[in-house]
Image (cartoon, rainbow, N blue to C red; front, side, top):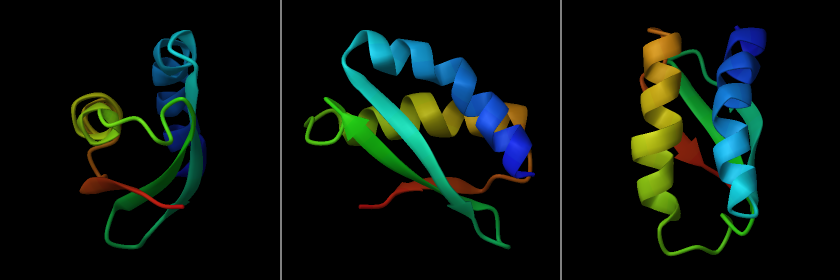
Length: 74
């Protein structure tokens, strides 16, 4: 499962990196919650929650139906 999450994140990563940010996979819980750590410019950006929901979470849910939600952790 982790490999599938990493592959999906690799599809999102270029867009984040273009704006000076990145995303790191932390873990996936048994109930389908993917925990990620936003990095670089994404870390303190006021739009990071929107990026997380409309970008990262949307792509992960499309690629991996088992994903229920995505959370940012420190």
